[in-house]
Image 1 (cartoon, rainbow, N blue to C red):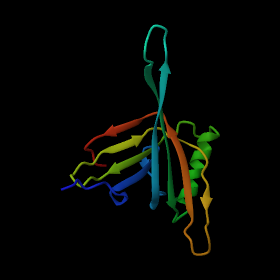
Image 2: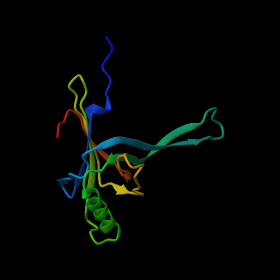
Image 3: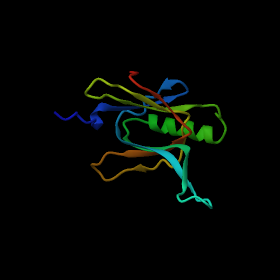
Image 4: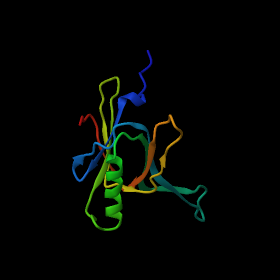
Length: 148
């Protein structure tokens, strides 16, 4: 029998602002992350193959959510205040928890995230309003077998 694969309904994404769980993120529709590595390659005289190495450059990610209150605007105002150095010490972490069918529940915390563009989309009269967030961080804290 094949192992059951992880589906989106088994993934939780939460945002922690200044040590407190944010209630602005109630309908996350999608989440993406990328571990950024650079591969280095050099060739040297007298050697028949190149040498390889890599460097780690942090993580990039994005999420899209539907909004249900002005709390996402409050979150955006906090990002703006931090960017303008009105609240420079505010730390924002994103937390992803995967609930695997075999009982594994690893937690990945994207530490001290910085944010880029935050477009919102009003698609049509009957469509749900969505907000997209673009983020980057220097590192993650992986807590295997943890549950929030």
